[in-house]
Image 1: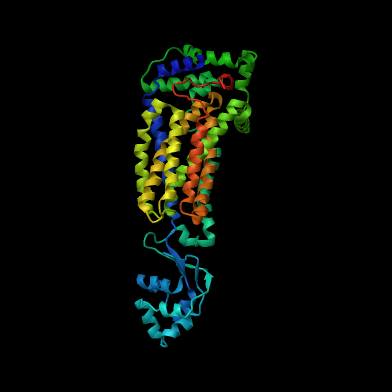
Image 2 (image 1 turned 60 degrees about the vertical axis):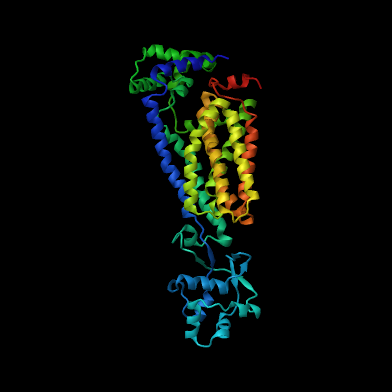
Length: 475
C-alpha cells in the first residue's frame, strides 16, 4: 500500500538531508544526556550495598567493660561474633544472637576483669565448653548491628540499619528513584519540547505546515542543503495529510480558526488524555498498545533487575558493574545487522527468549559458584540491552504519526512501573531463594518474547500516519 503522506514528507526530508550534521548533532546531544541518567541509576548499586552484618550485643560490652567496637581490632570483632551469634550451616545469623547472661559466661572462665579483657582481645576460643553445657540455647532479635566495613565504610543500609525486618525499606529507597523517573516522564515531557526541536513530521500531521517547513529549513541550512521555495515545501508536507484529515475541518476558514485559537494551560493535558485514549479506542491499536506496554514493562524490569542482582548472587559490586558495562558496549552494536536482516519482530522475540534461557539456567547453578552466576546474569543482560533499546524503534513504527510520541511516552511510563517493583522482587524474593528473582525475570522475558509474535513486522514498511490506516490493515 502506497502511503502518499510518507512519500511527500520523506521527499522533503531528503531535500533537507536525512542523516547529516543536524541529525547527528541532535543524536549526540540526546546521547550525552543519557550518561548522567545512567550514573544516577548505577549509583544505587553502591549506595544501597548491604555488607556482611551481625548483631551488636551491647550486654556483652557492658559486662566486659572494655568491648567498645571502635576500640577493638578486626580479629577481636570477629571473635565476638563467634561467641555471640548462632551459626546455621556455613552462614552466621544476621538478625539474632544468643540471649544469655554474659556476666555468667565471662565468670565461668575467668574471675578477674583484666583476664576477661585479655581473653577476648586475644581471640582465645572458649565456645566449646559453653555450648556443651547448653548455656547458649535461646536467641533474641537484634536491636543494633555490626557491619563489615572492608568494602564500604558507610552506605544507606549501615547508616539507617536497613537490614532484617527493615530490608523492605531499602527496596523502597531504590523504588523511590524509579518513582521519580515515572513522575518526571509525565511532568518533564512538556518541558522537553522547549529544549529539543519538535518533529516536523508530527507538525505536518497536525496541519502546522509552516512550523514544519521552518524546521526543515533549519535542517537544510545546518546540513548545507538548498531547498525549493516555501510554497513547494508546504505542498510536499501537507497535501496528503489534508486528504486524510480534511473531514476534521469543513473549510479553510474553520481550520485557520482552529490553528489560531487561544490555547489555555489545560489544553496540553486534554490533548494528552485524548491521545492516550486513541491508543486503546480501536481494536488493532488496543492490541498493539497493550502488548507494547508489557514488552516495555518486561524489558525494563529485566534490564534493571540484572544490574541490581549482584547482591543475590553474592557478587563483588565493582566487578558486577564493570562486567555489566562492558557487556552493553558490544551488545548494542552486534545485533544491528541481525535485526535489519531478520526484522524487528523476530529480533525482539529471539533476544527476549535468549535472555530468559540464561536466567532460567541460574536455577541449576549452586549459590557458591559466584563466577558462573555472574556470567549467566551478564549474558542475560547481553540480550536484554539491545531488546530494550529496540523497543523505542519498534514501538514508534507500530503507531501512527498523530500519536507516535504519546505511544512511546506511555510505554516508557509503564516501563518505569516495572522499575519500581524490581527492587521488591530482588529484596523480598531474594530472601526466599537466591535464584527466585532471576527466575521471575526469566518468566517476564519469555512471556514478552511470545507476545511479540502477535505484532506485525515493521522492517522496511512505511510509517502509518493515522489510526484509520492501522485499522484498515489485515488483521
